[in-house]
Length: 469
Image (cartoon, rainbow, N blue to C red; front, side, top):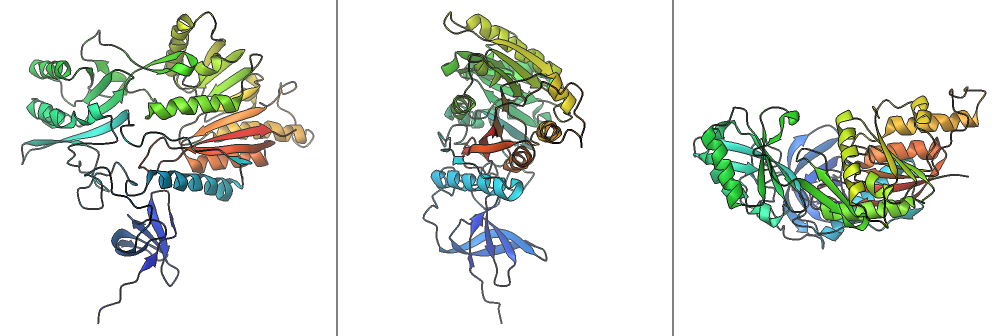
């Protein structure tokens, strides 16, 4: 006698965009492809004592927010591309899910609620991805090349002929790139092509394990000429070995026109994947920071100056702090370039850049960097725990100077009145927000999400912390 099929009611989506349901005995089931409020059955492929994981097998009641995916390579079937996870969910609903994820993390992990929930920052759902790392594989048995993202939950490369999340002019290059790599002498030793688009240029970084022959280099040149504005960069070993195939190619850059700022970058530098959303993000972050001409601002994790240089159009003085001395030197070059570009009616404030390990911050180092009226914090996924912990320690010393002697030089140091925190991980934002609110004397006055990566489960967010009187 066969076991009757159990229909499950999907309650929510988790951080991996899997539907979450419970069996009659209370066991949690994570269902790839299922959406909230649907009634579904599941094909279980992993089972533990307290939970199961599987893929959607049938839908008895469909969500009103379910849509047809915009890419033929999206799906749950074998060989489907794993680059996107939420194309089956309406974009507006994706934004709502991410907003809920941020709010749930703030409360459950940090015990923090924002006074105001900001309107989400969102933009084009297709053609937005200006950065990507595409895997390359020569399939000897078929004498063919595959280029694209990995298959869903697999090390194999998806058989992609197009990619709607890439700019259209890049998506159209996928098939010509296959033919190019197949023609190379080094076709079996080129595992990756990294893509980086500027406002006008398309950089392709070819990772090659063996030296390229003269004929191969010429094939790359011909491809670039046929598909202008493509420029080839070569990477024989680590990221530090990346170099232009031919000197004299136009430099990569993107602009922040609201601030009159131009940002040159190299294809392996970290820059935001979605330039349209980045422009809106920088504008909103600075409006929330509310910088005055009399104020000094510190930009923590400043990168190439994506926030630092726009802040310098509004502040009296800016300090950008980053972990890499090389990156700090590049940031300073960008600052000097933009100094020469500014018009007579808009000049950049005095700006300095410092290299420091921001994951080993202490109260002493915080004091050493001087008093700032406001902070902009834009950390990687690991968050800014050491930084906010040092700030919290200084606040606790002020509250209890006898129980914990003040750090040398602390007299006269004041915390920033406002902090704008840009996050790419809601869990570490929530952890740091908990420290700021419960240990450092701040309130979370506003928070909202930034849909930087439509159709993925990635949650970018923005939070504002104001010092309590």
